[in-house]
Length: 311
Image (cartoon, rainbow, N blue to C red; front, side, top):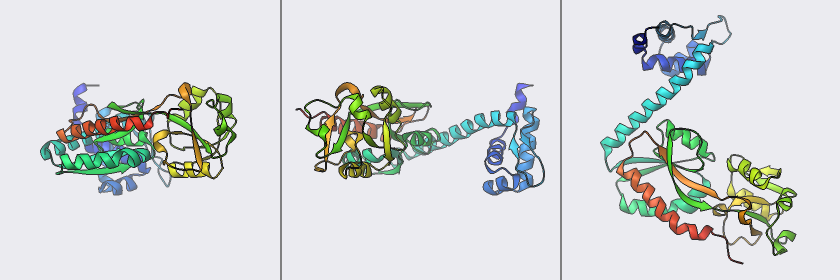
């Protein structure tokens, strides 16, 4: 196939392919794109001529259309191309706005509770013309996907990052602790809980936390979870109510809760590594760089609060 034939591929061809794959019909794809059905059919036909392969199976009747193997292969590349174009658009917008405009930042719950308030106070004082638009998710993998597509400029995330075009700087090492109900026999011991002690417990866990698998690997024990929630307050409240125990990062805890006891785990479980990440191929504005520097300063001061309490 002549390479220059591929120069005829246009973004609308790739967007039509993505819409047909997503919607399962030319009619619904056309509606989602704001085109006519015949226009979408023409774009798919043009794309098939250019690449020299049938990309869409058209069974006729009420049955949904689907992509061929060649279509699925091309779709993976098309999604990456569309994402990079969205990132380029975001870069040019950021460049034009200079030190003003909007900085879009992804956060998750414990960052929003413990890091963000002081960070926002300091940043707003230094960069009053920058508006911070926050997006919260229980999944940092989801937030990193938004960074890749150019929908976020920065996001907080746990290290190691999921695979993708990212760079990051570590902000804080947040140790895991075991919390048990006040009055638990484990709370009366002078030694840290053993791996077998932890494996024997009914645990309250997180649904979306990527570190659960790493914790089980570090403990080399299969853990028994009786309930899962992505809300830190729910996890802590259920432990205080005697439903179970929980392995949580220290930063997620509400202090001064007399219904629970916090037990250090020593070196059994490596700490959670909190970072701020960005797209490595995107332009970072001075406002974004200043946000990272401010986060480093705030987290450096907060680090002492997450260290184990001396016996």
